[in-house]
Image (cartoon, rainbow, N blue to C red; front, side):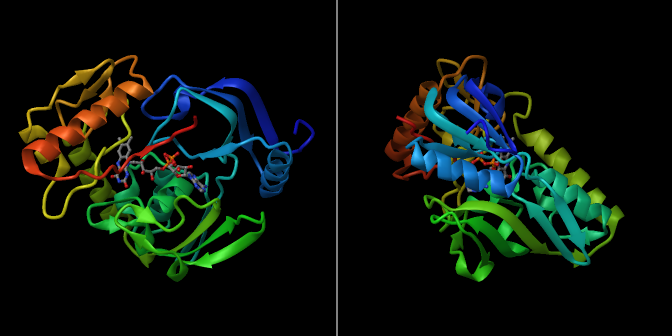
Length: 292
Ligand SMILES: Cc1cc2nc3c(=O)[nH]c(=O)nc-3n(C[C@H](O)[C@H](O)[C@H](O)COP(=O)(O)OP(=O)(O)OC[C@H]3O[C@@H](n4cnc5c(N)ncnc54)[C@H](O)[C@@H]3O)c2cc1C
């Protein structure tokens, strides 16, 4: 694969700075992709050589294993964002915050909620990211993907089933390449004021000073996972380097050297205590990645 143009390949690479939990994981290959053609050539090569792969966004919603005996693919070179009237089209490696900023600078409104989501467009579409009663599918028109046959296809939003933090793209081999949103004409000053308000609210309520991957569990109907975890006395509970945040109980934070197993064991403990005390089965919002 070294002769495929548009790739940067590292062997035995650290993933510690490529996941927001800062789990000290490694991969046999870490491949940064700069063009769609390079990605297609790479996927063909990996298939031929029987090398498994994993598409890594910003690693802000996943709990990764300690080692991946395959190729981690980063689409961070595919990050262009284009504004055309009310339409914003961006490549999947673009960060949510960058897309929001550019839209607001063009006096477009609708994506302000996404300013603090530290994920890529690709990861956010696959998981239907959202906040403050908005979600990424609200303004989405269509996406472009590489499908299972390595063909580039457009999919209209209507053909993608999506519910709270879930879509039918999850678990398929489709790779999101691009997304187009239709926003509304807005007012830059009003958008900036809303963004400031959201940022202050997050700083006041979330443990942003320690590595985490955001909310661990989805909120059960008419309740909050954080409230249940706090009520069960688990705030501050530690397993190894992983701790239930003392600021927001639906966050697990890495206090130093948390391993993947520390985080997973803490999740199991929370699940069993909530089931025992309240009879509720919490559902994970984060994704446990099993590379074994
Ligand atoms: C401090 C903090 C606050 C957060 N707040 C929120 C919030 O308010 N709302 C919210 O919804 N989330 C929140 N999150 C979680 C996270 O940022 C989002 O879920 C984000 O959308 C994940 O995107 P990512 O690029 O990091 O995806 P990753 O975590 O890298 O990947 C998630 C999944 O998507 C797949 N994937 C990634 N890119 C592609 C692609 N191009 N094509 C196909 N599959 C792909 C991966 O293989 C993986 O299965 C927060 C996280 C943190 C750390």
